[in-house]
Amino acid sequence: MIADSQKPSCEEPKDQKERRHGTLSLVIALAGSREAVVGGDRRSIAILGSCPKLEEELYSGRIRNDQELVARARELGASCQVSDGREKVWRSKDVLVGEVTEISLHFERRRRIYLVPGAHLIVDVTGGEARITGQGKVGCIVLGNRFTQKLASEGVGRARGRVNEQLIKTILAAAGERTASVSREHTVLKCIVTQPDPQAALLRVLKEDCKKSGWRLCGLQ
Image (cartoon, rainbow, N blue to C red; front, side, top):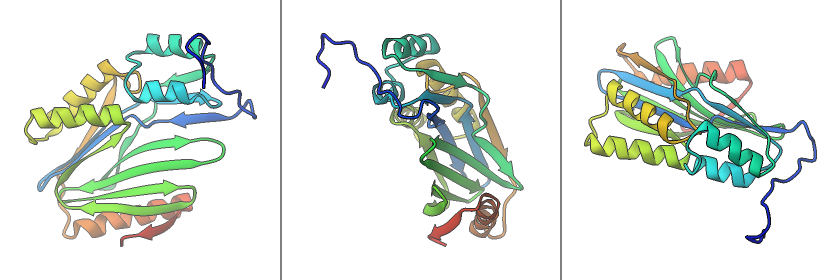
């Protein structure tokens, strides 16, 4: 344990090229009865080596903006790169998809939400295995770190559960102003195409993604 009088620092990586890429910031999905909406920020943060203290402060909301992130990383002797060009939401045919990720040389973790009007599917991907961990009909799902999840929950609470496209945009904008883990820019997509069998439509796109990425599908089907 580091004493208060000592300067905290990050662990030196055994491999100086090792980087941890994180996009675990904020994706909000709404599967309504007549529409589906998904929104996400565009931030990706790469941290060279292992610096759990910086990650803890970043994803708990203690680091509020880019200037504080740069300064705190310097204090801890860490090296990080920030990009706002990573799209976390997209459209696959008439299915909306959102994703948060954590990737390094040694592991890969992804959590995805697939949704159409009337149905949603949550999938966790670790290495080469895609596991269905949740599914449902109408609902609002938030993917992100604990601080952004709390922000989103508070926003939904103030709206008394009446989630719509505008509320998702408002929550994303507010998160971008309160934490460096979220970009100021965001993308919001909407779909009003209803499916005769919503769950089947989601599974079809998921299976296509598994085939394309070489993932083994398991879990609820």
